[in-house]
Amino acid sequence: MTRYELTRSVLVRRLLTSRWPQLGVQLLLLSGLILVILAGLLGSPVGNRNFAIVMVWIAWWGALMLVAVPLFGRLWCSVCPLPLPGEWLQRGAVLGPRGRGLGLQRRWPRIFRSLWLQNGAFVFVALFSLPVLTQPRLTAVLLAGLVLLAIAVSLVYERRAFCRYLCPVGGFIGLYAQAAPVEVRVRDADLCASHKIKTCYTGSAAGYGCPWQVYPGSLATNTYCGTCMECLRTCPHDNVVVNLRPAGADLSVGRGRGLDEAFKVFLLLGSGLAYAAVLLGPWSAPRAAAAAVGSTSWLVYAAGFLLFVVVLVPGLLALAVRLGLHLSRARSSVTHALRALSPAFVPLGLAAWMAFSLSFVLANLSYVPPVLSDPLNLGWNTLGTAAMAWSPYGAGLFPWLPIAVLSAGLAWTSRRAREIAGELGGGVRLALPVWIVAFVLTIGLLWTLVG
Amino acid sequence: MSPSGPGRRYLALGLPVLLGTAVLALPAPRPTAPPRARTIRIEARSFEYLPAGVSVGRGDLVTLELVALDVVHGAHIDGYGVELTADPGQTARTTFVADRPGIYRIRCSVPCGPLHPFMSGTLRVDPSDTLLRAAVLALLAVAAGVFLAARPKAVTAPRPARTARS
Image 1: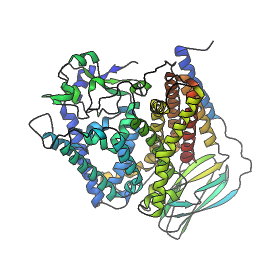
Image 2 (image 1 turned 180 degrees about the vertical axis):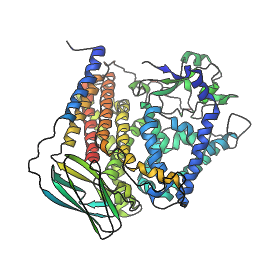
Image 3 (image 1 turned 90 degrees about the vertical axis):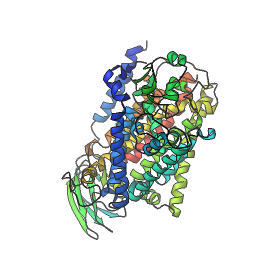
Image 4 (image 1 turned 180 degrees about the horizontal axis):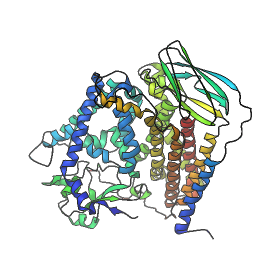
């Protein structure tokens, strides 16, 4: 596949390897995070008037899902403010390596070196998401809790164990970053093999060893690379580069995926569908139940949500794969074929989340200017936009824009499923049930979004 | 002889795009009933509209009555730009001609509580074929994906080396 090396430009390489631009953005976002937490705790309890709710769940979420992840992959992780205090304490520095930091620098327990904890964290947060999405205090508590957890983990374990193994948003971004048209990779793998010291992993005076615990020489997907650019700084041969590439270049069978990764694909696809149905669907009862945490109706909702995202969607796809294997008589176990075919569902999952996000982000984007003018609800009007009335943006684009996005995702998923089924030796017969399930899930989502 | 290489790609991309455009551009079916005046009453309470979905015919002169049962609620109809606000216990009215068939979201336009952003309903202007057209587009998308797929190469190795997990 053709790639264009962005870091061939001296200016781009300097911009990416210099710590100052990254630190500038990080400090800006950390200030924003502090403001969000303060606004969540002290500001208006009305979500649409509160800086925390509007900036996190409308502005940030919209920018992340509709722009950052599809176009730039894990770029957000390189500037995310949540792990910064913990990382600075762990390193004992804000910029380059110097002296000793705090903490025990233990290795993350081998038993937890997978995505299972992250999958669990995502499901846990998802169960409480409606109150968190709508109540400023809960948003503030969640974000402050994540910062504190990241500090605690950074003080016990080495590098960015929190981001790599626990952060529920990081897992989400990592999965869909595979579809992005940018990547950090090595230019010449043989050069890495002959380089004995592996400063990209161990670190040097120029930078830290990979915080994400990845050896860039064997980096094959964007899933675990946080695009922090440390390896660009530490490689003495300038062998680590940032490429522009065909979108979705990671989504092929030859990448060796674990069941944890496959499960994440199905979990997030199911969650996207469930969120759309609960939050945007025509039924008010599930919404009310999702908001009433602790009540009997919430328990029923939680059980239904878990059943759908943990059992039904993965089970349906497993059944489709089993049927496909039976029809095609391909020599593969169901588990292996399911793992291999899982990346095919990444585009549909991403499209589902984008369609869901489009449907509520644009409609609520006009809440942003007022809270920017008066972030703490103190009666300020710093930008002159405090009294701006609500008005849905892009109303004329609905429902065709979400339909177009979903159709594109479905086309991409169908293509990948066909290619992977071919590589597994199953051909069209293996792909057919998978296409049917993808089509049915898409129609289900269209029905909830379009009505 | 079937097309191959770039020709196949262009065909696989171009044909669905062409057909998709045709699906979107096809004229809507004619209404089965003549236009008439209708009054639709929607009750708004606790982040829901009752009924959640209302249907009218194309060309109908629609009088929409919004009744707020608990706090102040609003109703904004996407695509029509219709907007009205009702105080608690009061009824607000507006009249418009439903001249465009399709399914349109009704959104609460007045912050009414925590679940306000998700308070919505639908206005269906018949004959609406939005979902049908969307389903045809989805079928075309599957076909495009299948034809765009690269020619398969058999791979038998079950688990190649993965990203380092130290």
